[in-house]
Structures are given as C-alpha cells and as structure tokens.
Length: 400
Ligand SMILES: Nc1ncnc2c1ncn2[C@@H]1O[C@H](COP(=O)(O)OP(=O)(O)O)[C@@H](O)[C@H]1O
Ligand SMILES: [Mg+2]
Image (cartoon, rainbow, N blue to C red; front, side, top):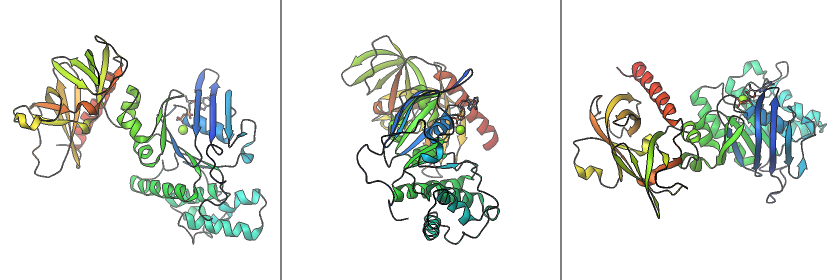
C-alpha cells in the first residue's frame, strides 16, 4: 500500500463528505437533531461529546447501518443515503470490533478483499502491506486470541483500510486500552492517516484525545453540533459554556457589562473591575459570563509586591479553600467574596516552589486577552460547583 494509492487525486471539494440536516429519532428520543457538516477530503475530523450525545448514531448513519429519519449524506458527489453499507466504500473500526476468532490475522484482513473478489496474489500483497502499515508485519499467521488489546485494534485498523476506502470511521477505537498504549496508538493512527491521505471521522468522548488527533472537532451535545472548529478555536475561543466546560476545565464568573469600548469590554463582578479584549454583541448593563482557563491565571499571596502583578489587567481577591497536588502542577480552589469558586492552576516549575495553603488570602490575575465573554449567566455556576466538588474529592484521595 504505497502512500495515497487508491485514493482519488485530491480535487478540491470532490472527495468531501456532505451531511445535510441529518436526523434520527427513536419513538420519543431525538438521537441526532438536524446535523449539517462538511468533512473535507483527507481531513481528520472528530465527533466529541458526552455519552448519549448522538456520536455513534451519526457514524452509523454515515456507514449505512442505521437509516436516517431525515437528511442527506453525499460522499464525493455520490448520494449514500440509500446505498447499502458494503457499497459505500467506507472502512470502520469500533471499540469492541470483534475480529473473527476462527480466522487468522491474515484471513481477517483479507476478508473485505475477498468480498470484492480480488486475485489471490493481489490479496496477499495488500494484506502484507496493511500488516506492515500497522507495524505487525509477522503476525499474519496468529489468531486474534494470541494478540494483546492494542494489537487487536491495529489488526482491526488494517482490515478497515486494506481495501483503500475513501472514508474511515472510527468509534472510540482506543477506549478499551490503558492510558500509555492509548497515547501511543493516537500517534500511530495520526501517522497512518497522514501516510494514506484517507478522510477520517473519529468518535471519542475524551477531550484530550480529540485535541491531540484532530484537524477539526465537532462538539456534540443533545444530538446537535454545539461548535465546530480547530482544537485551538474550541479551546481558546469556546462559543458556549458547554464547550468551555467540556473541553478542558474552565472558570465561569458571572459579571455585568459596565462599558463597551472599541477593543473590548469592562465588566464588574462583586467588587472587582474586569477587562476583556473581546467584543461580543452585548450592551452596558447586560449580564454575561466571563470564562478563563485555570492555567491562564496567576495566583499570588495577597501580600506579594505590586511588581509581581504587572502585566495582568484582571485581579480578584479570594481565600484558598483547597489545594490539589497533581505532580506537574498544583490546583488551587479559591473562594471569591462574591460566592464563586475559582480554579487556578500553577505549573510546578521547581520542587522548591512554595505551596500556598488553605485559608491563605490570595489574588488571582489574568490577561484581558485570556478570557472569553459569553452572553447570559447560564448554569455555568453549577458546572463550576461540580468541578469544585470533583477536585475536592481528589484532595481527600490524593493529598494528605
Ligand atoms: N436503537 C436505539 N433505540 C433507542 N434509542 C437509541 C438507540 N440508539 C441510540 N439511542 C439513543 O440515542 C441517543 C444517542 O445515542 P448515541 O448515538 O449512541 O450516543 P453517543 O455515541 O454519543 O454516546 C441516546 O439517548 C441513546 O439512548
Ligand atoms: Mg457511542
């Protein structure tokens, strides 16, 4: 399988997957709710969302195993909506994609080729090329039970790409593997994607995996796409509280707009005046939510000299409620006088770095550029509380 072989020459737009107004309802459940999405040829796109948000159902409709209740699916200009799965030219890998236990690895990989009635010599050549690609060149004669979980998933991947599909669908393929192996396989899948140039739609509920692997991520929530963009679009400029909270950790500070200026906003939370270099469509007096990532904050003892505060426009006073030791960083939960609990993360750049203590009075600061202002004061506060509860639980488990 040479680089890009079998993949149609890249013509802008011609190999795109176009999904329009896709819907799936089961009696009283809306599993997928009016999803429209274009996946570009050669792109690695991830569907990310919590359990039950409609990711698998979307993938199953693309593959042809679940009939849509409405909408259209077009791949490379050809309508898939009524084509049976085996005619769609799509490879698939699932979390528990059982290899055929009574067939050898080579026979498993050969299976989709035999369905396509290729010559024996061509089948052998392609099976070996696929084994080489997943870096298990000598495993052809083994049976699935003689493989580790990671090796089984590589064989499942080899079987999914051996017929050189134009689209590869993967549903939580690494979900059953331990963390180290998962991270290793993430990089291998990325390399294979790069070498083959195949379009990939990848499903995961693991936000870190999505950030590592994807060209773009579609964040699913309740059957809808909540936001679509590059990993940095989503992480640095979340459009909704859900995205800000699901992708990484975030702070949500309810605030009121006090001034709308050329390049940003002035806001007030409790007794603190805040600045944000963003200009969403809001007016003076509006209630909004200021979000800032824990690692974008600086936390200092309240008595620290003013010189240490230079350069950050926003400062809020509070009291440390909890300290979570995370090895590479420390996480502080800070009670603000206005009732919000803020999370501040401090990178442990030296083991000699002094640890702040519970009950200590601190100030937490951040750059005007590092916060996002979302309209409305949603239930984000509740989400912060749950993040705080989780962190507190970690404190009792992990820190003496
Ligand atoms: N065959 C089915 N019958 C009834 N409800 C279903 C069926 N398949 C999925 N659902 C429901 O549709 C929603 C989306 O499910 P799914 O696509 O599996 O989510 P995800 O893959 O994001 O976890 C869930 O509420 C689920 O319970
Ligand atoms: Mg699923």
